Image (cartoon, rainbow, N blue to C red; front, side, top):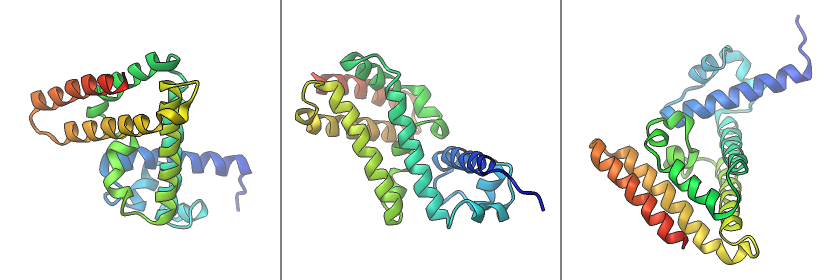
Length: 190
């Protein structure tokens, strides 16, 4: 019997989480079976339970990892409001809209997360709080708490705009929704 180092198990677990994140955002949580998720990671179904107690356990870890990655990405933006403006334009871009598997987990999965078990909803709540905190800190670095309401409004505006644009079959209308969303978000930030 082959024994793997602890590091190998952690690397494999991380690969499953990353591949599942992409698949969930692309096909939905309910549309992604364990066999497909494991195949994406280059593993057999039997290996799944060596890493996760259940699919719900995996979903909670994926949601936490996806939102953590999103917050870390904000750290690469320009400081302050300029970085926030860059974020708005990038978030509401046709590229982001058209590549669901690579984009924001909120816009791709929010309706399903609301129906998930408590562990997943708690992971989402923690991640959403971090995102709102990051936005608030960019709006008023001297007193982020004073910008919390605006940060929540901006976050919900971005997610809802992207979801609406993704749902439309008319590409011109979908682009118009994104463009208006950018204008609205930037006006809201002022």
